[in-house]
Amino acid sequence: MKTKIFWATGGMGKVIASTAIIELLKKENPNDKLIVITPHPLVFKNNPYIDEIFNIKDVNKAYQKYFNKDSQILVREPYNEPSFISGKENLLKTWSKMYGLDLNNTSPQLFFEVGELDKYEKLFKSDKPIFVIHPFGGGTKEYNWVRDIHPNSAQNLVDFISKSYTVYQIKSREQRLLKGAIPAEQNVRKIAALLKMADKRLLIDSFSQHLSASLRLKSSVCWYMTQPLSYGYPINNNIVINHSQTKKYKPFTFTVPQGVNLSEPLELCPYDSPQNLHSLDKIIKELNR
Image (cartoon, rainbow, N blue to C red; front, side):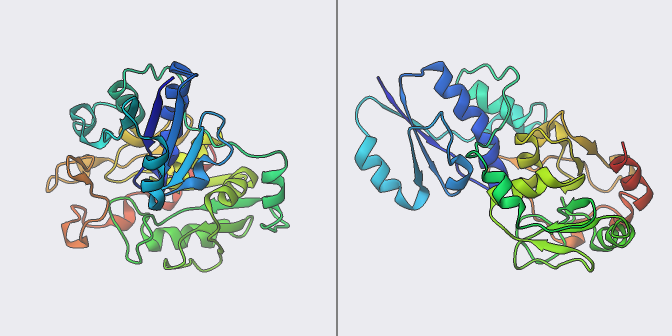
């Protein structure tokens, strides 16, 4: 029996995606111990494929307990692989191939205790259907044209849809709150309950679209400079822009060897009117599909 020490690092979305790789690793050698080191341990709570979880702050404890000559350290970075950098392959496909695994139809999954989601649902009150929007990613305060919905577009949508829906906005505490929306700033497991409750979901390329896919919920996802081929899921309704609108900037996936650059200065935005990349009519039409 060997011990595999898997590093599930990076942002919350990438860590959620890694649960698919965890499942493949365990099923390949079910008798091996599988240890996970991560900055987001709540993602792996109750995961039956893991023998022990360590917060990345406790990495030394993990190595003291499990590292020996038979241990295998799984720390390779899929973002650095040529097939992913080129935009030719999905993150999970690249990640599984790195370790000689067959992805097949395996997808991310979070595991919940019986009644856990029902308990969390009590946090979110509504006498109308629920609409969840996640317009701004990364915890940054400023508009990020690389993957955010333009603030004016997001506000126009909330103004329109709040007539029929209770609107919850997934956000960090530092981010702006859209007028008419209720802040959803809870942890990932509680946000999972909110997504499950919602009648409609409009997300961006952030942790919420990975979380939605892990719950097998079809959601509408707005894409800007990142691409659904690289980061997305077939279950989602992917709303992409027409990159031919600009000749000033070649589309790319931000999957460079030094990491994923998901924050760019606004002056580098190649579009004259980023507010109009997804019109209100287009988004509403896609939400109703």
